[in-house]
Image 1 (cartoon, helix red, strand yellow):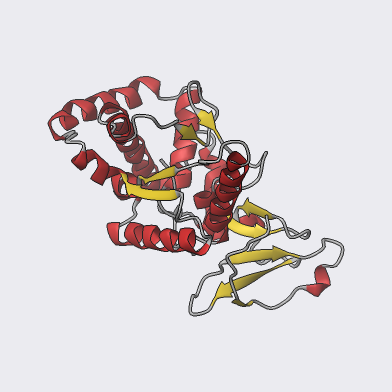
Image 2 (cartoon, one colour):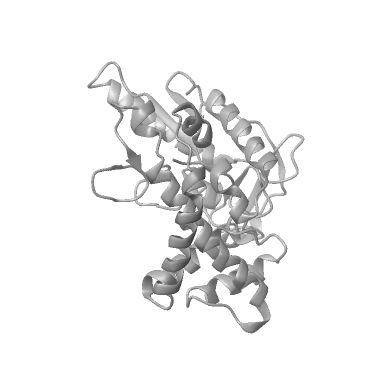
Length: 289
């Protein structure tokens, strides 16, 4: 379950809606993992990515067209990285249908349970953590990057200032609906039906699952929560847009014909005056990580 869409948060991903170098770096890292496995186990690795954007996108304010465009572009990056021979992409909702798993009859009951959870947990550390996480996922494109940074800081307390009452209502509703969708994922899960012999991987350390890093070991920021960047030593990383855009020691590079940056490059911190202008980027499938 991964790569749903670029989170619509300008402080995290800027104005980009399509995958960028962050996703490409993750694909290349997974390719390196496959090659390492092949060194000791010749059959190697077959990786199945389940896009869950069509399941959760609407509650965060993302329409289906944007989700499909993200998935199509992501598939193009898989091909570009020469990883199509071992990475397979699926739509979670489609797999549910193919597995004849229909949650429709349970929606009302699950909705009530989600609303009860919100009421009972309100004010707890768990509730504040989920409020902050949901705020970071919801569509905040109507706000400037600096406003979003302030909102995210306020949101860590589990609430927003009175001037953002409408946004707070959106976040609370999204919290309920995400819990509902998460329950649907687990109660109507096609993975045991479609991938009976698979190892369940995750980007979080959880019991019974294999946790993996997606770009760089020790860096847990997910590709769809940030922008792709090359540090001053040429190593790939994922960073928040607010921490790098418009900085004197970095510059953006674009894919020809695109209006939003595909990758940022950091210059040496000791030479901020050497900032280069943004320019078109020629992408090679052989990316150094």
